[in-house]
Image (tube, rainbow, N blue to C red; front, side):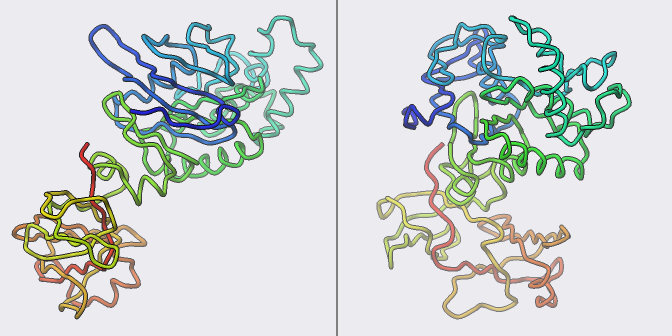
Amino acid sequence: MTYETVPRRDAMAEFIGTTKRYGTVLAADRLNLAIRRGEFLSFLGPSGCGKTTALRMLAGFETPSDGTILIDGVEVGAMPAYRRPVNMVFQNYALFPHLTVAENVAYGLRQRRPRVAREDIATRVARALDMVRLGDFGPRRIWQMSGGQQQRVALARAIVNEPKILLLDEPMAALDAKLRAEMQVELLNLQRQLGITFVLVTHDQQEALSMSDRICLMGKGRIAQIGTPRELYDRPANRYVASFIGRANLLPATVRGVADGRVVVTLASGDQVEVAAAETVPGTAVEIAIRPESLSLSPHPVEGTPSVPAVITNRIFLGEHIEFQLTHPVLGVLQVMVPRQTERMLPGADVGATFHVLWDRGLGQILAED
């Protein structure tokens, strides 16, 4: 993996060939990543992919086995956690139940040497609590706070130290869906207000897609792809990315040629479709990916639009959309996501019915090998 080039002045943190081993286990393998100043970056991936290891190395809780980590241009690989200009919000918040909200927020400031003046601590704690909309909650005990309020206390405790990087280790995993969505918006607003670099670790793709300026998708200790949410969703680098980010129909095909700037491929069913432009050679066996919302359904073939007849096997109500799962004797299961307004114009689209899956020109793309 080549090093991702970002001008040094724009990089708040950098991993350069960074590796972490636990005995024979390779937890992080030659990570090369520049985290930009003021951006919201998410490490995303399944359990055991290396995302938390990367965050812990940045925080100073783990020491790299090889390679370099820089924060604001300073090498920190051997620097203890308490000396790094970072703060972390943990998944369980790690608040002190015997202290008040204000005392929890002030804890880090009180440990500083040289000592911070008492008046300065009070001012900074009040400002931090105001930022997270808990200005009147300072005297309360932690056990008197709801889960969402406790998370905001943990955020206030982290930002009161004015870190250069705020690290977030799955901080919303314990919240219910509604509260999680609200806290995502609050985090985004807070990040814009502070203007500092946020680095989030999450296994929730929707969380990463909705909050991040860029996503670093991890797999088996390596970086699978780095890019904006739109880039990872619309242009996944390989099968792993396409299948992890959102949903995708992954289909084997053979390249036939190029037409009007698009690649013509033949599916295993014998149907020809056109996908986005890519560097390829006629006759090459490839795999293509197309998102369910990029396909549509029709009870009859549509002239000029390639289509594949398939049998509806499942019809899943998702609120704003209906997910149709269809089965083709050669292509297998196909997923089609249809808006409710469109679904109302598909009479007879019931389980057991045969419908045509329509494929507009240029949709879908050829995937590189993992």
